[in-house]
Image (tube, rainbow, N blue to C red; front, side, top):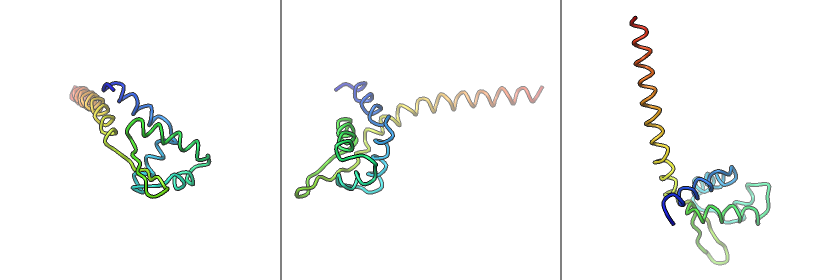
Length: 110
């Protein structure tokens, strides 16, 4: 999968508030089974499983079997790509805010 497709998948995966909440829950708990995640939402196991599948396809979560149970854990590495993408806009705004401050300072001198 190309870099743009992977970025798109990660952005699409985090676009949904339920999936962002799943990411936050996994970040706080380290690992959770499906029933542990389902209990945090007003939706059934099938709906939560669908969200988990999207997150897994984007590489944001990993799973491992422990007996008959599957535990889900966060893989935050793909979030770094989003952070890097946003960093370019941070530099853009920092530059423009600095320029605005300079212009305002020049106006105050006059």
